[in-house]
Image (cartoon, rainbow, N blue to C red; front, top):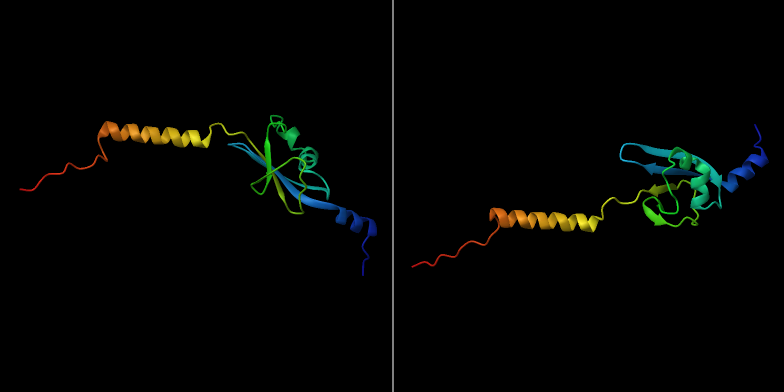
Length: 123
C-alpha cells in the first residue's frame, strides 16, 4: 500500500482551491487556482493571473464578491469558493426604470389608451 508524502499532505491542509472569474459581454474567464488558506481576495486575484489576461481591470475601482455576494478585497475565502470581479454598471438600474416608466406614460398620453371610460347616464 503506497504511503502518502507528509509534506504534500501538510501542503494540502494549508491550501485551498478557488475559482476566479471575470465576465465581459462577449467573453468570460474562469480560472481555477490553488492558494494559501489564509489568502485574501486581493491576493487570490493577483496570484490567479487574471489581471494579466484582462489589463482593463482596476481593482481599486472594481467591486468583488464571492458567489454573487459583495465582499471586500481583504476578506478571506473558503475551499471551493468562486471569487468574482464585477464590471461597473454602464447605466444605473433605477435610472433605466425611471426612463422606461416615463416613456410608457408618454405613450399612454399620446395614444389615449388606458384612459378611464366616459360614464354615460342611463335615462
